[in-house]
Amino acid sequence: MNASAFDVLVVGLGPGGTSAALAAAQAGLSVLAIDKRRTVGEPVQCAEFVPLTMGRYAKPALVQRISGMRSVLPSGVCEHSDFPGLMVDRAAFDQALASEASKAGALLRVQTALKAVEPEERMVILRGPEGDVERARYNILIAADGPHSTVARAVGLAPLKTVETRQYQVPLCRPYTDTDIWLSDEFPGGYGWLFPRGSVANVGLGADRHLAADLKMPLERLCAMLAHDGVVGMEILGRTGGSIPVSGLRAPLVHEDIVFVGDAAGLTHPITGAGIASAVVSGERAGLAAAAFLGGDAGSLEEYAQDMQDEFAESLARAVARRQWLMERWRTPAAHLDATHKRGWIAFREYFAP
Ligand SMILES: Cc1cc2nc3c(=O)[nH]c(=O)nc-3n(C[C@H](O)[C@H](O)[C@H](O)COP(=O)(O)OP(=O)(O)OC[C@H]3O[C@@H](n4cnc5c(N)ncnc54)[C@H](O)[C@@H]3O)c2cc1C
Image (cartoon, rainbow, N blue to C red; front, side, top):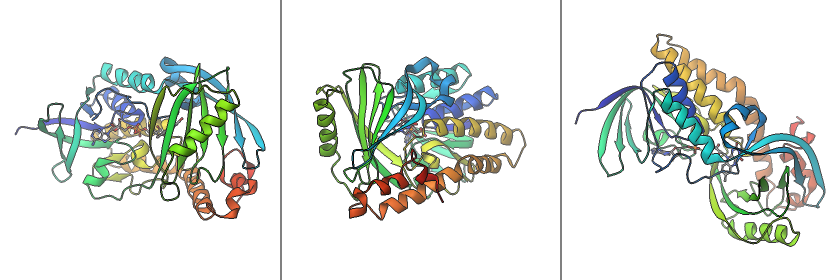
């Protein structure tokens, strides 16, 4: 079987992979970027909040602005913080980046799954929409394939620890510009959220699967409470969920000629679950590093890994430490105390205290 050959092969067309494909194609490289999904960005598995720094990328997908965050403690005490950001249509966000990558010359293929990697040969085996199997050669492989990276597994790297989430989209009864967060032993290893999205809201929760096997009942209780308070309607307009990596930065970030970005690199914040911005930043940086490497700069991939360390390691390490601290307290009397949650949530100065 003849193999096609590309400078860069990108696996995954989420924000990490689309950004990597765009940067690499703009740098003049030949790029094949694949995703096993039928349509880029769908189904959405996201609460759809991005920080203001993502404004440029959010423009084609902007739904509404967010000004603050209300963090509700177990006692019912509520802390209001400034927390400006944007709510986006996440499918449109990913699709806009994919469209730019395609215009820049990247070849994008959906319904195409990575099945195996042969790193010594710099070769991958792909399966297309009709079950057709194809081999492709790469010089650099960018693994942007999410929290359960197939690439990592294929080359024998350890899986990342994850928490699980469940989210409903429900009607929103009045305009809302805050994100609401509930901290409670009801959501061990995670939290509950309401993120407003125009006339609807994404209401969801995350929890550690070792501590909470069932996410459905606590989510339905949260929705029922909000409906009772007249915040949301009872109708469930959509259901989603997914995994969030919580073990911090993958080590190594570069393995042979493979560069990990976004969730596959463990860049998602282990306390908040936010990962869109770090996926875009790492994807762009990986695409540029690939171009520099193939242009003769032998140290550029290691420099990528160092840049990610410099930019994200400190905040990820703090989040991993706070998570670990909380994990020792869930399902104990301490999990009902406001003080415990103040130490474990980014809205409180206790979170940042040594
Ligand atoms: C319920 C939920 C809510 C969230 N809310 C927010 C939020 O509000 N704000 C925020 O910043 N972050 C949020 N996140 C996290 C955010 O969605 C991720 O951090 C972000 O999507 C990471 O982007 P990525 O490109 O690294 O990976 P992904 O977006 O996961 O993309 C990976 C892609 O790889 C593809 N893929 C996987 N395996 C293969 C394979 N073998 N072959 C081909 N393709 C493959 C997948 O189909 C997928 O399209 C949330 C996550 C969840 C689960």
